[in-house]
Image (cartoon, rainbow, N blue to C red; front, side, top):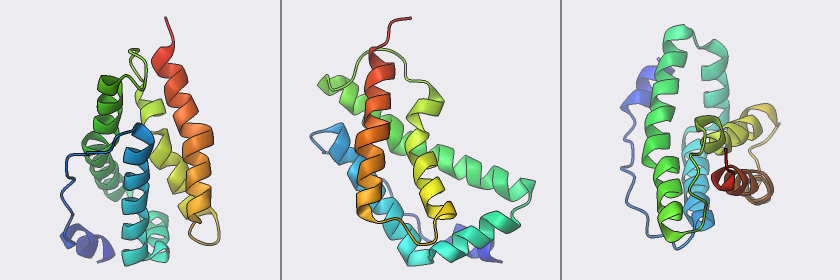
Length: 138
């Protein structure tokens, strides 16, 4: 029942980014993620994941992939066009590491993460990873 209700929640269209930097683009994304969790409630998501069967997990995975295409991959492409990151192909696991790290904070800490924790993840883990893999030469 919770899943059915969540699927019916209006999803905000993802507007084209006008952020001047990858960091600002991703901070906007993190703010949107946290606003959604605040609106629906972290405990709702935690229960949903705990009770999820394979079909539901597949649905959630597909929705996350769609969101990543609309946000993270677009932000990385824009950053590449601005010359912020290197030309090397960024592996999918590296590109999608940010939401994975945020999910870890959301699901495996007692309270919703503070903004400072998200900034720390972005500045000290994700952005250095993206810079490293985008500049590597194979």
